[in-house]
Length: 357
View 1: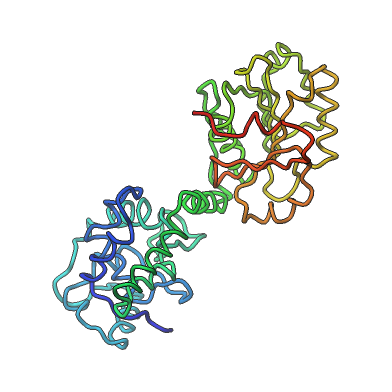
View 2 (view 1 turned 180 degrees about the horizontal axis):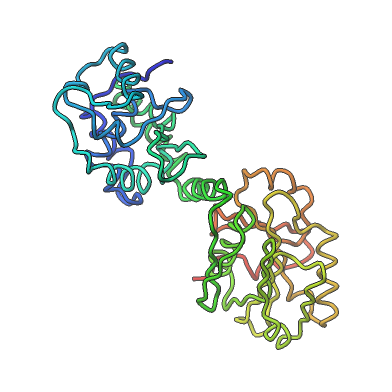
């Protein structure tokens, strides 16, 4: 295993505030001394992406002043080997007491460095397990190379920040973490204020973002007519009948049907959620038009949206060629943006062209 260059805790403490600027989420957790200690411990034992070595809070709170001063690769590898044995405790003056474990795990790691993508987490380990699971993201670890200085350091930090700290990058990271956990419960807050638990899984996560993020940004007065996620169904028959739309549960309905009651004439918004397949294709669009044609809704009051987690997702790569003209594409990782597939023959895009204030 190739260890990263040795970096002192002091050097790490100097660079963390440069990497994480003012305004960074939970910044106090990722620029304080405990964060520098955590990064130091991971670098020290080589818990870096690609090395298949992992660290836990114990590597931080049982690190000592004397051990940290041993800089050779042999000393560092010996510390790594020792840390895998029962009773791990390097000799010397400890940095922190055992009761610092929760602060390191919950604040510095989970709410701080992991949340920002600087630290990655090994999956498949029970939450209550004490097994080491954390490791530094490779490009983040490189920012603490002592040989990287002045302009080169500034450029490396700027590159990492633009790549991993942009709003869309953070959203993409959190979506990926959420959808990766197939067992995590998903709760959707409906427009009525009611919270509803739905099936776990990637489609459920995207549906949650459509209801909670897309609708509030792009619709004036949104209401939910229909939501179908696995074996969960939510529908408002009374509202549908009020606006003249008959929802037949046994029909081939989309994942979500929204109505915007804000305009003078209500807008029907059909949303297909795509984790792997099933976008608003030309065939699908025509089938849904038949539903609204039967209710005598003008087609100018019908909007089609295909929702993906991210434009780098496999679902988008797989299905984007099937998307129907005059339909929208929305990505949960970039909630303020909409893509309109226009054939130049309609002005439908004007209705959803900008997020609502």
